[in-house]
Length: 129
Image 1 (tube, helix red, strand yellow):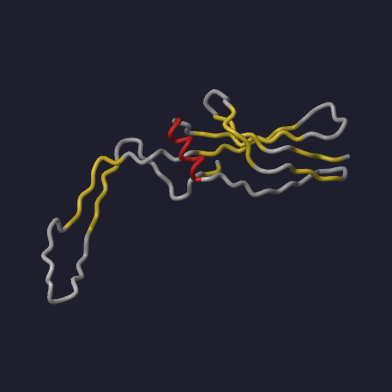
Image 2 (spheres, helix red, strand yellow):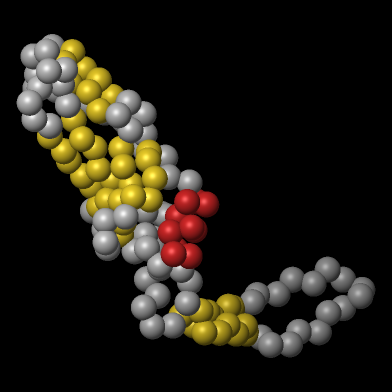
């Protein structure tokens, strides 16, 4: 007996449209249970494309099969796409600083950026959830 899966599907959780594929084919031999590990790489350009399309959640789904099997099994993980920045403004303090030609000029600047409603960006491009 064996277990295999072709690449994973990337599916828009709102409507179910296929957005693409990720990962490589996985397979394992033996009688099971099977443990298959992989590293998925989703590029920043792909995330930017999803943001441009307004996609907020993507399902990474795999279907597992076996030669001669009469059924399949599937599993999925939900990927949360960060909201594109919704900035309303920025300001700095001080707003003016005199520079001297006779010396190096060091000074502190404090920046404040105002985010709009719904802004909830995250450090990592995608959160697994």
